[in-house]
Length: 491
Image (cartoon, rainbow, N blue to C red; front, side, top):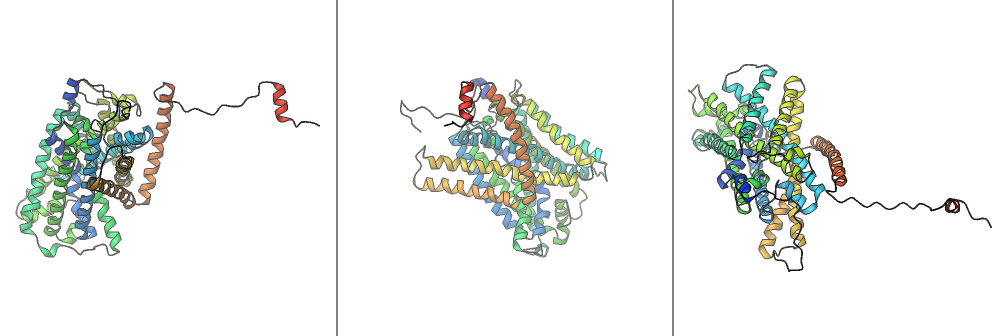
């Protein structure tokens, strides 16, 4: 974009970068490999180890639905790359895109929804992770408090790794991605030599309409791809974000999608359909089909799931802190979330973002209704992340419609197609979640607006944002004027 000398440069709403060059170099500790690993680690968590069983409940159509969702996720990856190229110094990713185009209110709304989704999603990951720890150590019917203690380990080890700095987090992330990716790839490739066609269930196994089957498959598939935005959310930590965020997002999503489709299809062929739909650990059954005389297969898969869950929690802990830090730096969150240590780590955001799911899991393990509440929060995370996706897509549409930068021909058609498809995909995510979850998301959103009202009032009082100008009151100067104003004139 070029500007004439008389044309002021557009206001950068996404925050002011006050870091020195040295501090910026230290903070930018995620190269292309680490950023791609962060995306893969955020997408591929413990959910992949239960996804085949849920998709089998819909039938083999679940594989097709998974592929369609994967295409939608890759379109979002391309969209985030385009937005980061245009706003390369964006701090907070999806939050920054919306604030740049639509101002503080939209930015806060996106930041609030995404922050809720991140720590509630961590509760979802660690709850599934606990079951695999139980299987790994052959723990039979542990008490609720025992499981809560295990959950604390799963939540706070990644927190401690993140408090050690981004470099340590990146190293841990790269190692965990390799440790979990190779065994899954083994099943997705070698497992095909042991597949039996008779194991595949019907195309629609719901016994109802095709639409109901798509709904079952879409729910778990949509949740499984949350994390495609991981590199965009941490763009401030990525070297050369204008190029690497887009590449890491697309490559990480494509690799994860390929892995998802491969392992889902092969597990459906390794395990009989009647068995698959009634198990919570389908990979244990799959490994037993490949190694029928090996007693170690079940524990090996449990160990892989444990590593996978820790890796996912490690990446999401960083994203939780980076989301709240970016919003707080713009005075739209309590300022404590912007506190950083000498390593540039938003330590307060890490602690709060870990304490909240810890309390949620205490509730889950101490109350009989906790599982139902937890399930609702898992579904809620899908809706709350769809709102930031939607705002990011319409932010790109606003840019294209404004013609602030010349985009012509096939490039315009490509960019409009990507943004338009992302809008439709985000709306479909919301629709497929069901009315009850959307209702709950609305309540959470309204609660966040109360906080915004208080924070915005403080910003106006401190002069950090302009106050609205109220219409002046017309007050008569004298008592006679009041009498004349309210008393009819006598003739």
